[in-house]
Image 1 (cartoon, rainbow, N blue to C red):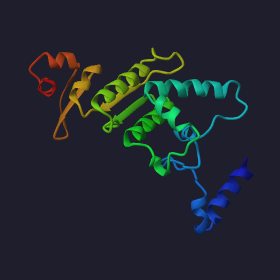
Image 2 (spheres, rainbow, N blue to C red):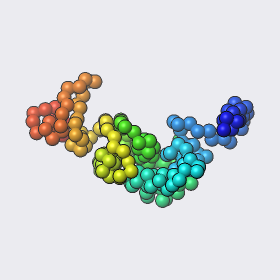
Image 3 (tube, one colour):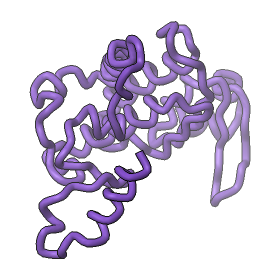
Image 4 (cartoon, rainbow, N blue to C red):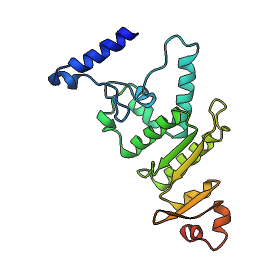
Length: 194
């Protein structure tokens, strides 16, 4: 294995600039056009020789695609179809869903989404958010661990889905609490959702 890693490093260092475009090296911040959509979302492949590894991975992958309503996209494009450098052939809403799927596949303890679905319609945002939150509780799929979610919202009405909301003004926390409780009283949050 060390020899393979050394060879990889040597290829990377000695590849002439004129030939660099012919090789798609992995970069966590960019879409790799030389790999499938599945490999780009996973940022790798299932390890060889692990009992039921690929089957388990496919099950998790399908669940996340269901949660993000991406089955249509995957069916149309095909998991082996190149979507272009940096996902250029995808729409911005599709790129956002792929980014969210990649984050969920890592099974985070804490998921932070900072306006991560702003390219989607309000209805689609609500549906995807509800599915992500449901999967985070551990009730949606028995094979997924639960996680906490911190979501920066563009639409304050979506806050009603959460257990706790934080209201900021000019970069300062001015209010926090249960959204239903805050909406029922004279609060800054109530003015946002009415």
